[in-house]
Image 1 (spheres, helix red, strand yellow):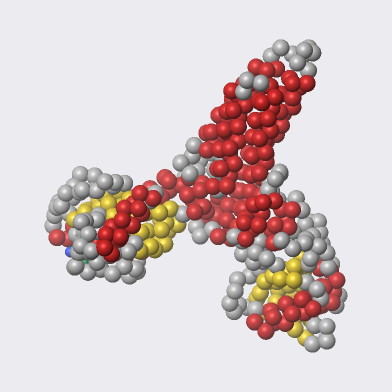
Image 2 (tube, helix red, strand yellow):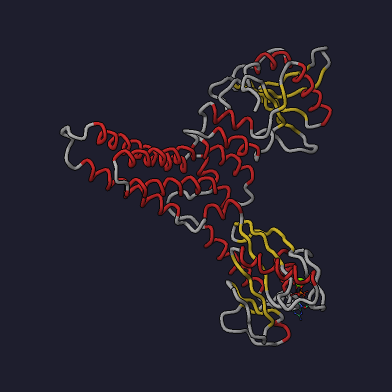
Length: 429
Ligand SMILES: Nc1nc2c(ncn2[C@@H]2O[C@H](COP(=O)(O)OP(=O)(O)OP(=O)(O)O)[C@@H](O)[C@H]2O)c(=O)[nH]1
Ligand SMILES: [Mg+2]
């Protein structure tokens, strides 16, 4: 990572031609560079129209500009935003002028990284910025906004605060074993330790709802050959994703498509029909089908109306080809992928399932594997502390638990993960 003394810039609006392109500038030289580009710098946080010129005086654009002095800016540094006309020549002209003035293009997530390093937000909030930019549905947006508000970070900081108190009490037990500490200090430490452990374990025991909502769900369509799995996938997706044919064994590879069900992004996977494979390619397809079914959040098991269901796992059982007049087995939803019958009912059931798999009630949910790993570590250390024989060992476990919690919000020891974390961000964020 290059130094934070650099002044960086990036187009924060999307790629491609657009009416306006938002260019962000942040770093110590922001004000001087803005002045060089547009002459008079407008008053802080007041939009003004300016002619932008390069060092030779050639006009680059007429743009609305904002001067955003630190520390009250997004990054906490002196910064500026330019609302340029969105043409390539304009953007390149301004970018070249900025480079000539000594600025450099920002790396992915560098603005948010600076915001974190300058204490403008904790790491869970920085991650929420990324999630909000990536949010495809309203439910994802709500979760990201809540995290951006600091609701999740507040829980983790609260636990860290209690742990710090516990650690101080434990250290007092070590330093003054014979002095007249109240007799029940150790009992109180153990009780609080157990309570904290319980809260973290409860938070962890959430069926990955928050993570599932953030990442989206995986629904696999499985069943014997030729029952209409691909037809059903196409019907649910509303487009021709998979080849449909009367020949059994048509689908060989697993095919994916994204749909939104119940406000949750869902990847639908159409799989090869499960049967004794005719050749090596089909055998591989069947192996992949089984692997997808095993990894899926939900299996849509398809059979033909009138045929018995033989699936290993059927979270939602569908009897297709209802138009041919077969009977629907107990517990199955009868549909016709061809005629459209029953599809609304099926869509409703899948939407309910998607919501149930991701619905978070009460306090904000865990949203990332990174948080889960740190919390699992903290819980293990707390359990260790509770069972420790020696006061010194208990204190050490508490210290390690505190460190794990601190890594979630970025209070301690996160230098090693920052590069990976912010590399996932967009340029300009
Ligand atoms: N009558 C009727 N035929 C259907 C229906 N759905 C699919 N079919 C037909 O059944 C045949 C197989 O459909 P596919 O969607 O390819 O079935 P599949 O389960 O994906 O088959 P494989 O990929 O070979 O495992 C095709 O000829 C479809 O037109 C339906 O609801 N009614
Ligand atoms: Mg198929």
